Amino acid sequence: MREKVQPLALILKSNPRYLSIRIKPEDVPATLAFLEKTWQQFEPQYPFEYHFLDEELNQYYRSDVRLLLVLSIFTGLAVYIACMGLFGLSIYTVRQRIKEIGIRKVLGATTVSIISLLSKDTIKLVLIAIVIATPVAWWVMRQWLQEFAYRIELNWWLFVIAGVLAVVIAMLTVSSQAIRAAVANPADSLKSE
Image 1: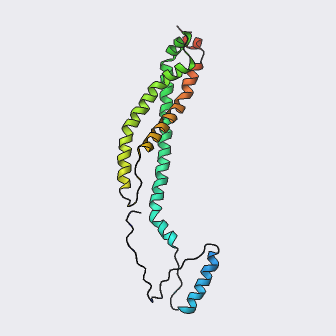
Image 2 (image 1 turned 135 degrees about the vertical axis):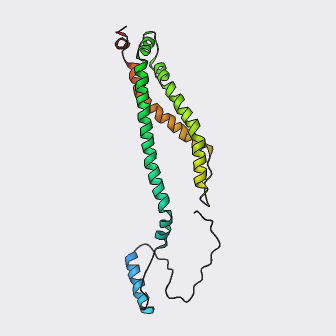
Image 3 (image 1 turned 90 degrees about the vertical axis):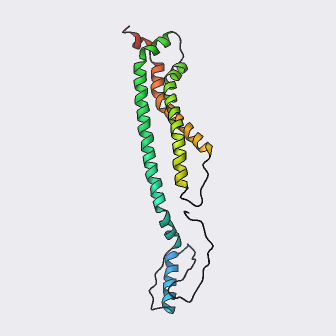
C-alpha cells in the first residue's frame, strides 16, 4: 500500500521451477499432498516448495500491525496516567475548597451547581489540551499517511469525536470526587470555624 499499483503482466514461460495455483481453502493439506505428488510425476528433479501469497503479503504489513499494537498500548497507558493526574487534581481541588463548598451548601447551593463549580476548572484544562493537541495530531497523522499511496483523508469530525471523548473521560474521572464533595455534610467541613 506504500506504492501505487502499476500495470502488471503475468507471463507464463516454460520454466518448470515456478507455478502459480489458486486452491480452495477447504482441505489445504490434502490439496498440497496432491500437488506434491503431481509435481513429482512431471518434474522429479526439482523439489516441491510452496508459498502462500496471502502470507507473503501479510509480511509486508507486519510492521504496521506491530506499530498499531505498540501505539494502542502506549495510548492506553497515557490515558490511564492522564486520568490518574486528573483524579489527583480533583482531590487536591476539593480539599483546597472544602470550606467554600460547605458555605455554598449552607447558603443553598445545589449538588449540580457544586459539581459544575468543581468540574469547570478541569474542563478548561482539558479544552486547552485539546486545542494544543489537535494541530499536532493532525500534522503527525498527515505525515504518517503520506507514506501510503492509497490513504484516507483526515476529516474534522474525527478530531471532534476525540475531543468529546477526552472531555467525557475527564468528566467521569473528576465526577467521583465532585459528587462526594457535593453530597458531603457541610457541618463536617465547617465545624472548625
